[in-house]
Amino acid sequence: MPRELYDYIQVNFAFNSNRMEGVPVTMEQVKRIYEGATNAPLDIVNHFRCFDYILDTYAQDLTEEYIKELHRILKTGTISSESEEAVVGDYKKYRNAVGDLETTEPDKVPEAMRDLIGNYAPQDLMDIICFHVDLESIHPFYDGNGRVGRLIMFKECLRLNILPFIILDRDKYLYSLGLKEWQTEGKDRRLIETIRLMQDEMEAVFDYFEINKPWRGEDHGN
Image (cartoon, rainbow, N blue to C red; front, side, top):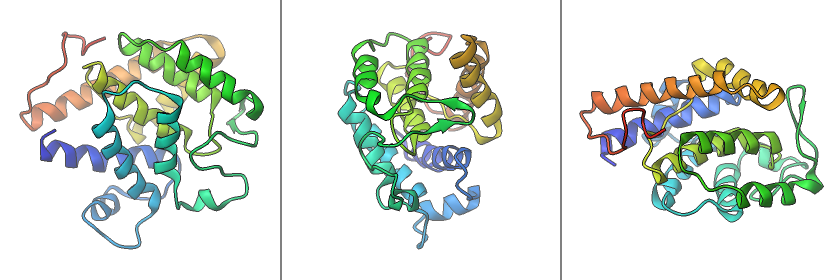
């Protein structure tokens, strides 16, 4: 990956994915952290490390161990990792919820994740999105599920030679509503359209940096 694109994605991915989860940082602060500012929130620094990890390993099949390792990298040393409820690099031990939506009970998470991974044989973007919806429904970790899930989507797009994307904080409402509609009503249109919009944003970034786009197909590999 060309350096200018790598720098752009590192900063924008870490900023947007963490802001969506309530980490109080600005884009300028994330840029300074990326450039080496001290006393930086580990949520941001660890996200940089996660992105490096998926660049090094994107060709690997997705496994439970891989997902747990992403979570371990993301949450090690963070403030939330110090809470009694937190488990870093392993599945949750306590119940959690997404707004008013219940998630999978802790004792049922291992089986749910085995089933999810076992049935996952992605061929296109829709398969990746479906996996994301199911992963977020399970919510296997006490904290960090959204960030891990969005990192996985980026990794899997690279693996399948599909145009990757970053969910922007400005479109958090559309993304969150799209997830909820899919999970509770079976309506997939809003989330798919939101992700296609994010692909368009990423394609514009590639065009700006005059970088050859390796994915196949006019519809970004869908």
